[in-house]
Length: 153
Image (cartoon, rainbow, N blue to C red; front, side, top):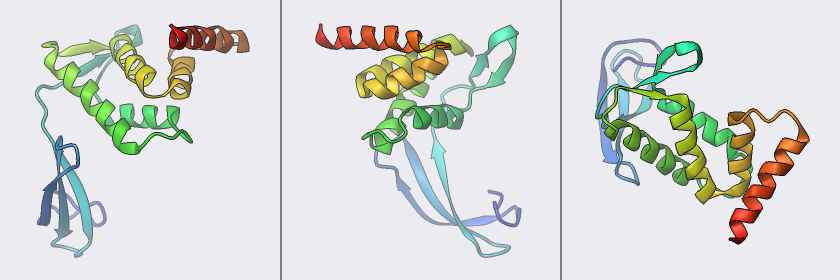
């Protein structure tokens, strides 16, 4: 594992343990070049995923990008980071088990919307405002009204 501080190629694992949700292994490492310590996470990857974006562009699935999007939607909300991590892990696992090498951004967006809907209505509306490209305050009002009605029903 390359050291993020000095770029040295070798590091020694000092400690390994599973994460709280058991979906990854957390490893504390020490660089053999500069002796700096850093943490890595090892996750199971069932298959390589490619995301099909607009205009037929393709890029590799980026778990961290999904995590950042959800963190932005959930900012200043009473949602524990572990719940967002669990949501991202669940979405990634669903995508990997679909049996398809390519997945559309629309499919990912719908999975995120479903997960956020159950997690927090404000984060759900925030994410929807970007995902569905709200352009006016009326768009927010209409969507929030749908969310409120669904909550009552």
